[in-house]
Length: 227
Image (tube, rainbow, N blue to C red; front, side, top):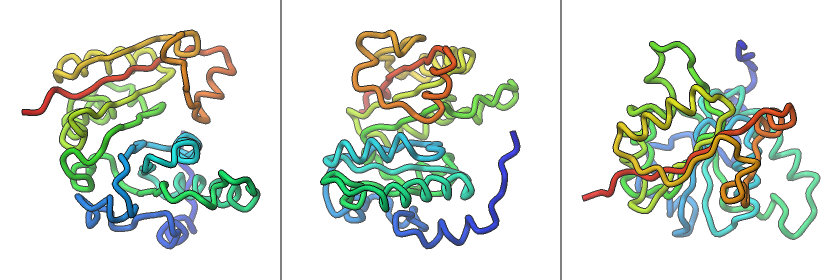
């Protein structure tokens, strides 16, 4: 499906207070950007931002960064956040959140934005499957991307991946093994897995697909031990 371009997106995203426009300048200094030393979790390809926003709201002791490549998509996430902020009046309301930021960038540049050991967890939720074989290196769970993640993840850091695409899930398991990563847990039916479903935070796509009776796959893995 063709992504519809929204002419006003670039300007709104550029000036939104939660968007970091020059993230490379924050490399190694994200603790200063957030004003604390809390662990950093990032979601790559965050879509409309429901997952990351809810995570940040429920875990104030963790700093979250939502990363999205397209300004038109990020705009929708920002609009949803602003709308929820206007309506919320609870003590845990969005207006009190100091642990959420957004970046518009290509995931290939991740090592230029985060320093070694600066990220504690990476979330990949319903990433583009890039179904054609020649596009394998573009998949966010390819060995090429795992190498990028390994450069920024803390020694005790983890990567969590969810998808409804069985072929992409199989590809991801294979890439993890070939890259020397440690597979800590996996399931092809998340919502019926007694362990992995605990505390599961659903994304927009997850709610849609599971509502259609589709099974959700999930894996948790960690990079090779650093020397």
